[in-house]
Amino acid sequence: MTSLLLTGINSLVTNDPARGGLLGEVGDAALVIEGSTVAWVGSRRDAPAADSAVDLGGRAVIPGFVDSHSHLVFAGDRAAEFAARMTGTPYSAGGIRTTVAATREATDEQLTANVSRLVTEMRRQGTTTVEIKSGYGLTVADEARSLQIAGQFTDETTYLGAHVVPAEYADDPAGYVSLVTGPMLDAAAPHAKWIDVFVERGAFDADQGRAILQAGIARGLQPRIHANQLGEGPGVQLAAEVGAASADHCTYLTDADVDALASSGVVAGLLPAIEFSTRSPYPDARRLLDAGVTVALATDCNPGSGYSSSMPFCIALAVREMHMTPAEALWSATAGGAASLRRPDLGHLTPGAQANLTVLDAPTHLHLPYRPAVPLVTQTFLAGRPV
Image 1 (cartoon, one colour):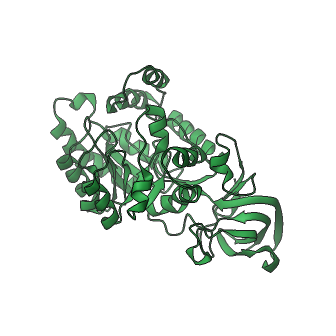
Image 2 (tube, rainbow, N blue to C red):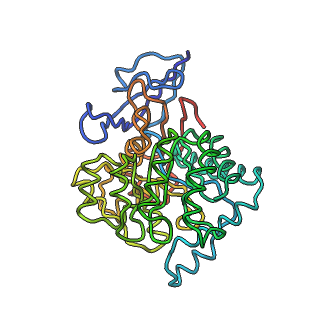
Image 3 (cartoon, rainbow, N blue to C red):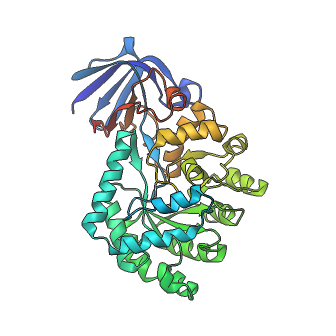
């Protein structure tokens, strides 16, 4: 097994609490990769020999971003919808049906090419792990093929047949829930790790969401929930009830919701690019963090409510608009995302961890929110190999 020494690191973010502080930052650092994992981290002067070495010239190194919420299997776009929002039309979940129609008409090759384009875009911006949901097919065949396509790019695939009720079931939502928990689940489960449901007005209520998640759990899928995006509602409480890994959006929370997240250990997935694109209020991350809730940041990249693939952009928004410190935002975009996906091998740079890391053309991670919209990522390593 060959080894690679990365040296000349001005600031190395390890996310190792044993090294002190939230980020376990090491100055004038080095890191050794053996195969696909991190073998050693520490001060440059103590670095062991390796088969080869690369001097990073005083750049910063951080764990690769873990984007724990995205919707990449789709066709078409909704730029006109975005333009309408910018002139005063409020966002609603109904626009999803526009993408459903386009996705159903697209070929497998067209959908695969679009996912490939977006994942490549993410890699260039430092993302090394991405969760990808279905949810724009909403038929048995289209949900299954969406998950098969997503599985070409990630192990973190999520069955989201319960995105909205499609037009053909508008008068029979109970019939659609039966489809989602029956034949559609049968077709999707072999290709999915997770099951998700959009618990929101215009989508699914708490009873429907519970039935859908319980059906998925019975098939070995792990639950996560779209919750409390458009208003206060039962989503967060349902996430705590079923032991979901995450409740994502969390824009409108009661004190009881915050308490439920803190006591249950459900990760609050915050998606600030959505608030940016929909002109909605931003979640109060400070409130969650002060209550002891684990927070993840993710892009929620999708063609409707927020078409951004940039985790650095999300970090900048979280610091500017959601009252997070730069350290908290970076931790939430790396270790927080790993917690949301229940992946202890990701989101940190310690011996034994997967060697997923991002090199910044900057001396420290502070430049991510300090220089928003600047392409600071100069190299991304995935499982020990540059991509």
